[in-house]
Length: 195
Image 1 (cartoon, one colour):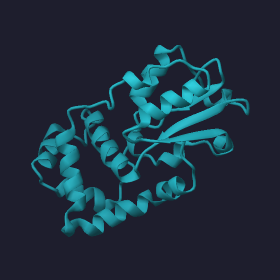
Image 2 (cartoon, helix red, strand yellow):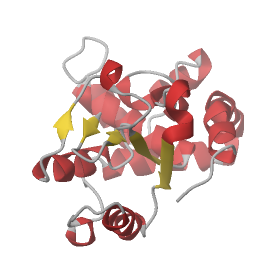
Image 3 (cartoon, rainbow, N blue to C red):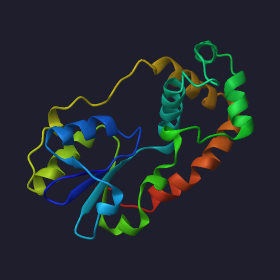
Image 4 (cartoon, one colour):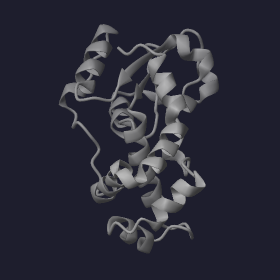
């Protein structure tokens, strides 16, 4: 979490533009804080993303992040990218959807006791525009309008393979299992009002 002198606090949710936003806020001299330092005087904000697209992106990130783990290897990544689906079939068979930091449900990053103090933004093309104007309305200069739209990494190939896997009709049952896991995030999104 990042706090500024105006009592605004950014809740960073992985795979929701968190790296770009955190870096920009730190450039504006916002400070990292621990959750126990938040109080009722703070206004918190977070970015929320479509759960399925976020999970795919998080899954890819966690696989690349865990390359040094004994279970993951460059061979597995090469096999996934070559569309050998044994590993994906195993993930869906075992229902191991929360495989790491980036695939935890978004709702689990939001502290229930502070939800009434929160402003939510949707990760979409006009996010920079909305963040810029909201912060200006709070009296804070920022450069969100000039930031790049996304933090692109060299993982597009695997992202596309997993997306194709999920939308292949023969894998519909596996996609349904994943959507069942993600349902609490969809329920959460349907319960909030976006800026």
